[in-house]
Length: 334
Ligand code: NDP
Image 1: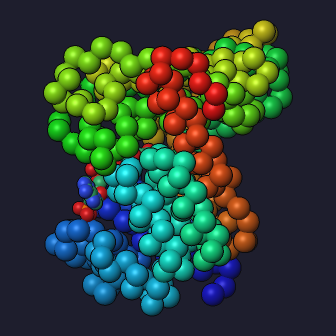
Image 2: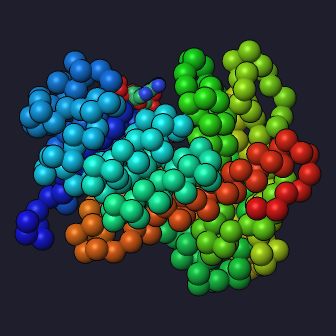
Image 3: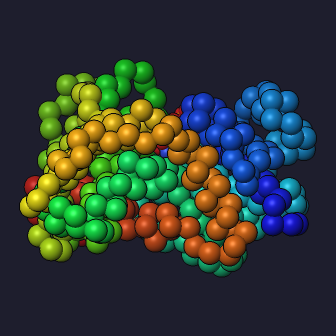
């Protein structure tokens, strides 16, 4: 097990994101390789084994995840299932003695976040999240400007992340999604706002669920949500997220300048400008490969991921407060 050994990764849930982003990105990593999958679809698992060159014995289903404990090829298990299943799959991975990555949102509640963190601590495994934008240069620039206060501290932030959902899917079901677009898309605005505010959590939030154009489709989740976050030094962020609109931008303003990014939250093709330097441009970059390589190095070097369980738990506290505010119609403390 030399330090140049590639760590073995298992993807749990072979849906869109695993198939079109994470699998291909694993081929681009320096420190990882795909060594197995967990899937409810055996034929799909067999196809992945052929495509990625791992043995059929490394295809698991959701009931046989404990057997991963016996497979020394596996170092890291990455849950890419619907939101409400992340906790269960992360805990099974930890109990098999494997390091854990959870997709966003980390879980669907603070209580679940605590359970995952506790399971990882108990098994002494590391925990990271699919917060790929922490590895993206446009968001690094936002963090750099926040830290350097080149324009002064950011005081006003505004974010919108929305798309028009057409096909029936788990994202519109509370049971599997844990919520509506706030869980799925709003979490990116929360993350960007926290970057602009120097990673200090907000103290209070307000929120309002807007008109449902398709109440039968969005039965038990919000369709469109508008919310505000109030940070400790008085900074404010307004967020807007919808499954019936299009939007993909984030702006942060300070006394002496601003930073704007849009598209802000995609895998590639991000664009940004600042009041001082006009349009910024960074070379093409694979967020997912960088995210996974960083975690592999955390495991090898025995250090914490910068996108760890505590950060995910913090964001779940904010999301819960936003849902409390949506229900009460009042300002709620985080
Ligand atoms: P998909 O619906 O495309 O895939 C989810 C997969 O989970 C399914 O294909 C299935 O895999 C597995 N699964 C297990 N149980 C269920 C169930 N009860 N219902 C449905 N699927 C189930 O979703 P996505 O790939 O788009 O999203 C998966 C996760 O990744 C979500 O948490 C999402 O938030 C996150 N994501 C993150 C992104 C990012 O940029 N970081 C981007 C997109 C998604 P199988 O058939 O193999 O069992």
